[in-house]
Length: 71
Image 1 (cartoon, rainbow, N blue to C red):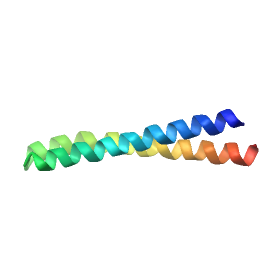
Image 2: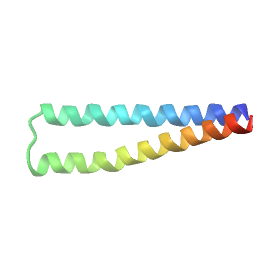
Image 3: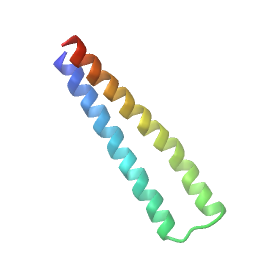
């Protein structure tokens, strides 16, 4: 079950790293002074990536908890 914990921890860290990257990209877009359609287009792509990263992180946490309970 140790492998399950490590895989889950890796997924969680990958998801958190992607979330941090999404935050940085959004801040860069804000600092660039984008407005209207340009800002909406950039953030629309980020929303999908952000939700995916959140899902990967949640699945990773589920794997860690499962590994701890079964281990």
